[in-house]
Image (tube, rainbow, N blue to C red; front, side):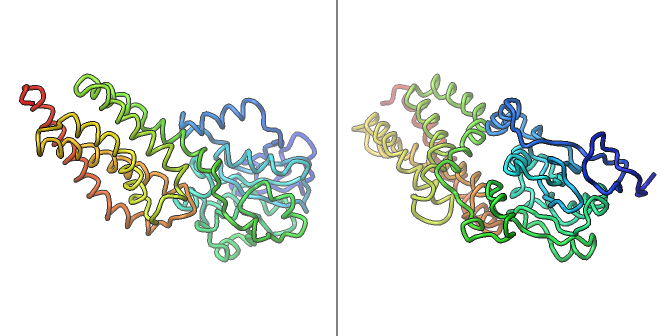
Length: 348
């Protein structure tokens, strides 16, 4: 049947013009976020089945939209889609869901999956032009890095309008289609930072368990505690304290925080070799080499989740700091192994 048009396949009255693609039926949705949806959100926040929190791309009707109703675009990530439909409670509208591979709007825009080609393709495949008589589609502001508005207009005939940063501001925005400065500002509050921590912690949980057990049996309880504290510092404490740590580079922020956390362990191991000259200094250097390096590396994971960085800046940090992190970490491990052998052989 190709791109031919036919009558709308909706089973209930949707208020459309009756012209849409028969291969992409209109899917109904509601503004209600159910307990099942919230469970899905919880699993997504904790990184469980990270690529499985998706909705089917296509065209959705919320309420009883007509040919004059607004059209919004969203990612097919459940948290993005659910935030949008929940914010539009009581508003009859169309929602065009792009295939972003289960990635949120901001990250998908950076990766290119929430981009010009996908938007144009989805407009065409859903027969959106036959559903509405206007030619305007409202995108999240954070989709802007991936979308060329003039190219979309040139190819599809639809004008791109960027809505506010947060979906919860949409009802107010729709009254005048004008965003206030606050609506255009990306907030990064304590809670915004805190919700990032579970998925990062879970991503390193298995290596943490393995390393902690190995250190416990090879080097004792304090070494095992150091491993746990290091990971918690990099995945939980760092995002919480992010705005308050000096310097701009995330890696350097991680180094600084890691050095502070490493000090008690440096003192502990230094005293363990007290009276043995250079061995005391070497023991103190082990946590001072390893902990800041690991925290700095974990800090880099948050560069893509914040409004403080750019793609160029992240690449610069990777090339500038990762080699240093690796060097320090290797030196710390070598020193630790040497000291362990010395202690095991009863030389101290």
